[in-house]
Length: 268
Image (cartoon, rainbow, N blue to C red; front, top):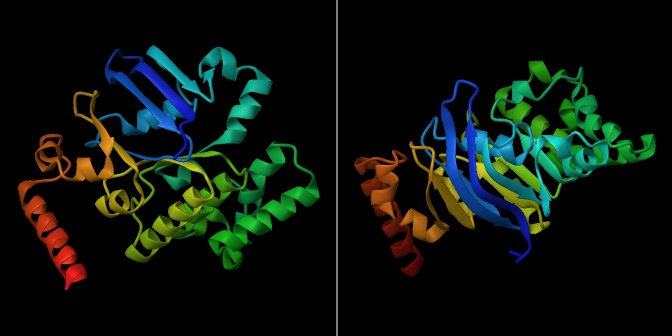
């Protein structure tokens, strides 16, 4: 992980038009090449934070910087600024149906590169690279809306990866996926991080956290940052995970037993 700061959040807050607070006083930095996991109970504000980091909505309080620039409505209304930012940051929605709108998979993957102004030859090359990387050859001419949930998730990822972003924002990427597709996604995230991509992801999936996280940020049900620490330290804070409604006592005992058994097996 690099010492270069990609995101800097300073006392960040967001309120809905009704005045209800979704996030309160969030401060953290994200470093280049880091894998940061956002955890929190449903409704804590994880998805809202990702939308703020993607410039889809803007802070009600505090400051949000990305790549050293203030991410606000004024700057993103500048064509040159918006182009550079959108080129660097890719966002995969929790609901793939909200992201897919082209007639075929190949057109979906090509959409981003076309909007970036790549030549037809460059677009074709980029599309073929992504289709190969994600194993989507058999889906290339299919309508995205007719695909399974796992296939839609792969195409949504492909449509984002086709612009080759430096940062990937993933909102509950394993939601609704079968175990095989979850393993595929974990391997892909590891591969992308090895290629120096910065990964910021919300999830409740402890397997993903254990396999891909460098650090974990926990947002409490009061919409404030409760903890920010290494994966190992967070996963050992069982009382904290129970308090913020991420696991229960029964699961904790099972998890501890599973960890102990695995370590004993490795030492046998």
